[in-house]
Length: 268
Image 1 (cartoon, rainbow, N blue to C red):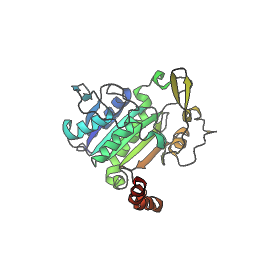
Image 2 (tube, rainbow, N blue to C red):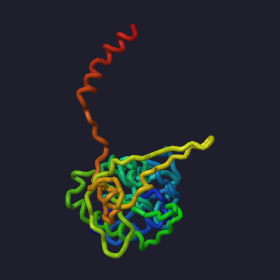
Image 3 (cartoon, helix red, strand yellow):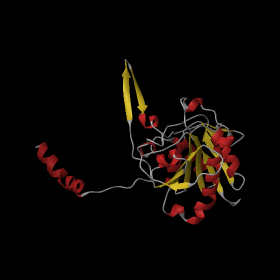
Image 4 (cartoon, rainbow, N blue to C red):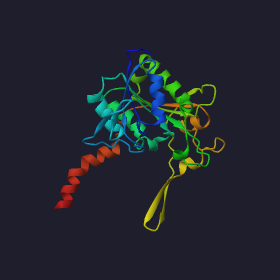
């Protein structure tokens, strides 16, 4: 990684999180890193955008009282030098499957960068809960070693290799560091979706049942998907595009052609 490489680093766990500090320490060894990150935890906020945000200068960089998308817009348009790459993470918890792409603040930061035509890497770490909630799981900088290693590798090599000629951003999910480096598998987001809801009086509890079965022996996600790769101990790298492409079809074309005729006859 060249010292001339400019990286804008953000996240959705907040500027004080262990994951962003671990990435900053690793990336800044070989690149100029500007941190523009939320002042507090903004997990699962998607691409929510504010019209105006307050900004504080912290020891690590700029703390924005807003969302990850706010951070990317403010960082790219005003607060930092024009970067070669945006890196979002490292998120405490995995971001796996098609259905999380629009929910995750980490991934949304990468998507926001793509609209600026700046390539991006979103890095998240799968943390097996083992009966405890993710929030109650304490992680050290050493736990993020796998995440920092692969993100540094991709930041150093992906631009020159032409990866971003074909992908707007990379969604990277890694297992917790455990000795030797894990291999990379190029994956596609899993299509599995198992949201549910239960009502209790005036309250409705939303439940994501996908996470209830992460046992490698019974995991229903097929080979080649991001979730299977990570659960089986490999690093998942999904090359993704933004904006989303359209999917035209003759049936929809026919509806468009008959629209005016239909509504005019109905209004008579």
